[in-house]
Image (cartoon, rainbow, N blue to C red; front, side, top):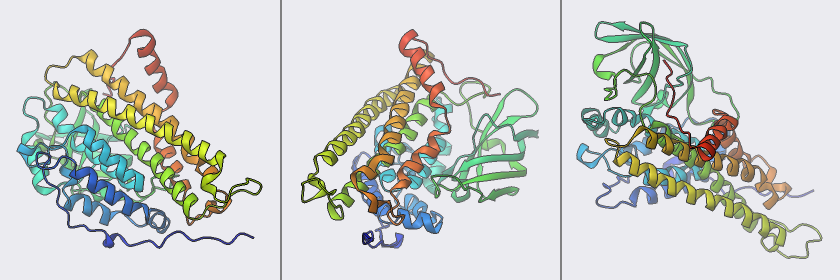
Length: 414
């Protein structure tokens, strides 16, 4: 019987140097990526044990806040770090490389904290951005536009919310959370943000799904919750019936970066195991697993796929950043085309992630299947999130663009 080899001893989260405060991009544009790489490597050493113990990510979120990483995309003139979308994606890849649950939390933070600036192209949501930067707000997500379990009722100049929203990521640890709700008076949406401790909010810790087990996804209950007039997102586009322009293009890349990080994380873990603990297969004729030609072939194939995905992500990230920089003049067809390009990146990294992550055992052997190593978490984390959107419909839309030149912005949800 093979002797079980234990993984390296795992340090607690408090062993990480949490005293770093990141400088603005104009001072050191690469500092956020270096920090995320170090933090991600630390997370990797304890991700499996903390997942198995069901530890809530309160300490990790505190580090994201204390470092200023939550302010990454807020312009410097408003008190943020002033980084670009490509930098944010690199940060998410590095964090997800260590623990996709933490990467997903920051992914949803960036998605939701950016809603104000996407809607308000006239004033760039200056007042909101300044408040978020000064308070180092961590943002939660209560969206799911297809869900009609939550209703917004006008109440003077504000609204009252009643109902339930499932699969809400991050609000139970957030300072504020977005809320997207159907209005009960007109065919429009209420898109707003509220403090996470607002009276009438209920958080149910009911997430018991395949992956992203520490991403703090909860069911939200709303019992006559107040939304004040100043908490409604200002829209430069008139009545709100869908997501703001460029939201889909940016969001698709955020999600894709989590998948890519998980894929690289699986390769990191498998290669470290193969070097340190791997045993060559009987009859292989090699002294070390890392010299087995079949293992080298597989690893080379997996690594090439991941690097191709990374290059695709970088290319489209710059295209979307350029579109954001032109957000006051970009046309609707241009925005729609960027959305398709970003969806193609996400579809490609979904394919690569789901092909590579469950096959890392081919690089390690049977002993690596012990649950202490947790090599299955990389696949589980990708699989659970990619179930949100059917790839069949996504690829159909991409095909319509590639074949017929047809691209469409998000439909009305109202």
